[in-house]
Length: 375
Image (cartoon, rainbow, N blue to C red; front, side):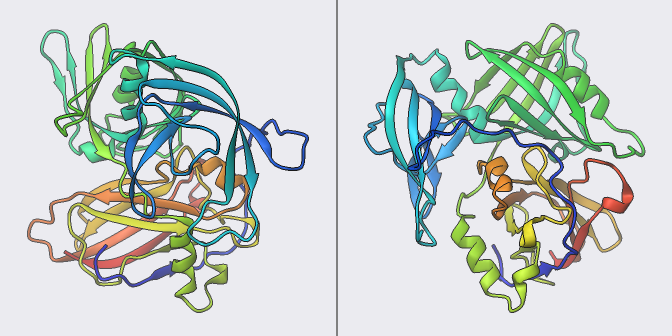
């Protein structure tokens, strides 16, 4: 991130979470809870405090170790694990300890099985490039960065569009058979032409997926249906360096920040470049995110505008691989990050606007912060 300074937004604390949390089965003992871990067959490159290899557990990167468990590549596991909360946790350490209780199953998979092919679904965000139809017709969005599809654990997905954000469930079988269902959306009024309806209706028809180009560094997702396919480009989730320690440090550098809700390290009037990662944290002082509560894997969206109001880029403020539902339940800081890609042309300055995820569509619940930037 360029010329790191701090812009912080002070919000009136109020409101509550906009979704209901599901409870977890807990062991009756006082020394932790028993949780189920579904482990993918291959580790992936990730960045914690330093570059490392991470297991993919329940669809998310896992940065810690499990005492008593040794991972063997090429095998999918279902584990029962005791998770215990630590005391006096260092700023750069995990708040939990994990210890193997039982290996429920261990299944060897080949290259054609789900283990080696499923991890990229969760590792990448997927940007819609075009839809191809039998007969040769092609639909291409004016701005592909507005349509970003993200798969989450527990068979949930979310996506931005050129108007509303959508969300729902997906079912995946045999590594290639996929279907989307119970699709919902926020309630913004869509002005002008939009491809949102076609995008949603096509997702509802999908029955097959294929991922290619991983080894070549060009991940491509094909979601297919009887009349054609949707093509998505894989986008890196970005550096995972936005940690608890990062959020603590960010807040500690500003006097009087105890009641701040959203903070980001983007300097007023600093230079924003295409490909730059915008990162920050959302806090819950006094037990509330004050309108910036997470919703379907994101805390809001951004819009980059030129000085005359021309929109140069839009996209989600994604929570990435963080277990945001658990973090929100515990009122912990939420870490967001997104990569901005744009062409400023002859423009030399503009503004970066961070907007909350207002699922209700009610204008009075809209919140935003505007930062003047240069290109």
